[in-house]
Image 1 (cartoon, rainbow, N blue to C red):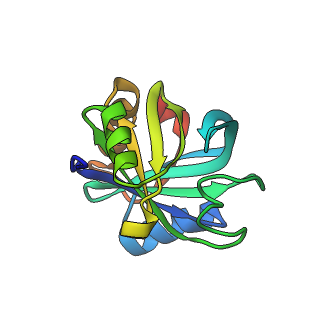
Image 2 (image 1 turned 120 degrees about the vertical axis):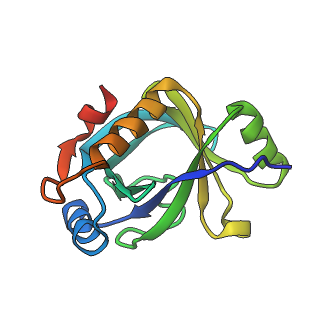
Length: 176
């Protein structure tokens, strides 16, 4: 049995990060977005093989839900290319903090969801579980640690009282 956790983020794979941010700001009043361009070298375990992510990313708030816009920068296999061919875009995954990260991964695997990849971001563990067969998208699990929680808090605080005009900040500002 998989323990249910509150979804805190939805992610979309995009081709043009700046255009996607502008569309979310203009059509959904989402923001501000914290942007990291050309992030590479984030080490991951991809299907049992050491690899690294090569992405550009923007994270902002739409109400109480974080929106992640992600542009893959690499050509190699990844959790993103497993769902979308180069040039394709769309909804990719939901993310949730889980109280016991390793147990949540084991529960997903026991339920038939392959662990696609895992790694560390902001000092905390994350894993992408392949829930496409049952849900139609990937599920990203987060270790409930201070790095990721702090990043989420800073992004939410920036959205509180946001003026709707300044819409891009460096991702590093949310990670410090």
